[in-house]
Length: 127
Image (cartoon, rainbow, N blue to C red; front, side, top):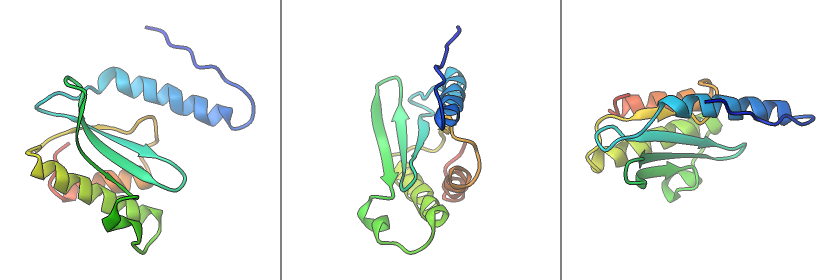
């Protein structure tokens, strides 16, 4: 299966590279009922993590930097990503989820993405 990504000018090279990575990751990563998908969405200001069952198309647990428990918290963006990771892991464990597959959505596994994943692992989520 061949997928092309249109490349424009300026920062379009970065976004095109991210889209290519996202397509490459999503070819292999599929969430099931036994092992749902933990998808991470990152913007310049916020992070959102969702545990999704792709078979049913339902979100089973989610956490974000916009949640009431995290929104006014102190620290830099990496610290907030750690809090989001531990919160989504707690909510997933409460929903009866022990193991997930990690979908980084084309983002590089470094910085805030890695911090969120490490915090979720430390909170007891297996992936």
